[in-house]
Image (cartoon, rainbow, N blue to C red; front, side):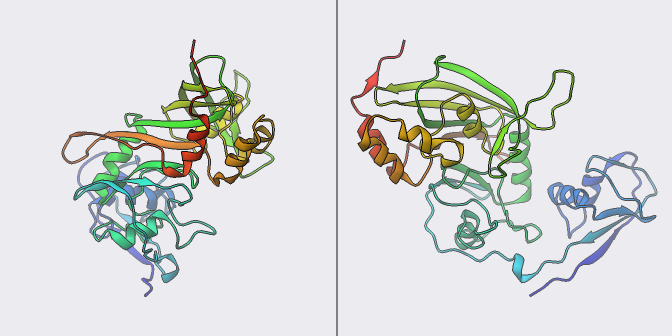
Length: 334
């Protein structure tokens, strides 16, 4: 079934200086500031004289009416439920925390229209908020396809907005464990840069190079790392704490540090694997089919209850062969 596009007219308000997204969120066909902001950013919201609203924070003055061009929702946008058993770590009426396996894409995208975490959620969670037929219902943050670990999903707009605010304010506790080639000279440190699309390879990101007097175009990214174990076979286990959460952030920072993740073909794993002395270890890494990155800890404040929640999950079984090989090869840290 297809829902045709429609035009809403939101009557003039009496209060002075109210945010546009707040005004729109009171309409029964919009209901949330998240949806309102998306409509504004897509250029679908205008004053009755035709002038577009530029941003969600724009203040609406008394006496002005607003028109909203709601998008068409077609069958092609509907998400097909996927029968896939999920490792649900925690669930209540507002949210759930999932331990995502490596190999599972978070939300529908090119080449993955029906085999994602979102499809599985739609197939197993009856009260998952669906928004405007978007392909990311409940999604607050994401993990790369070949990264495993903890991810929180919202069941309603209020929870989604509350969690999104915490991610924006950098108050969410996120700890990743990573298996890398070699070992950093400094056993702990911080990687900080501005990430942009790689100019020669659109599948990759890189740190932007810019002059001190210029303004960077990339997104600010900060990763704190600490070496947990160093192995004589040429690998190390490290902990990464995210201060920001940019696409490929850990992968870029570690590769630019000179210590790419094992199994990460996009950021240099193939070359580093060939340089390992052990043919057995080279075979293990080549058969992994994933990168050596796991979202081990996730903590946040529950938007409804105010309770501080913290979850932890160990590496999945598909990494067992790597840890078995490294067992007994640990080098004492200085």
